[in-house]
Amino acid sequence: MTSRAGFAATVLGMVLLAELAITNLAFTADSEFVYLFGHRINVVCAARQRLGLPCPTCGFTRGFVMTAHGRVTEAWKLSPAGPLAAGGIFGMGLALLIFAALERRSHPAQLAKVKRWLQNGALAYGGIATLIWICSWISVVTNLSRTKG
Image (tube, rainbow, N blue to C red; front, side, top):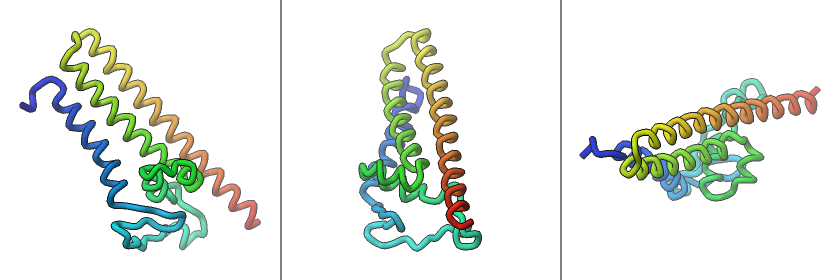
């Protein structure tokens, strides 16, 4: 069964989409905290506590959860990393399901082109998302430094 065409891509695509669905069902978030089944998770950024500056991942979990609930604009303001990760997971999940369907029906030459396109697209998305994430963090730190100094 696991050697059938498209099996691995189908399973992985479904797991990625299930991750977003489970996040939506189990977690909620506001601008300060994440909640698991309504109970606040009391985790505070150690870098922000010790240094007074947010780390590059500050706001990631809250933004990811908010994006899973459709609050993308609010999540983006916290940290673009959350919405970018959620968008990447959603996009890759769908792409893998489409790839699995094509794998069962396409010729090897066509499939190779689609696979190359997916790989290049994933690399480009990852690179651009990382650049946006790091630039936004630098912007936050720079703005904090200006307001303090």
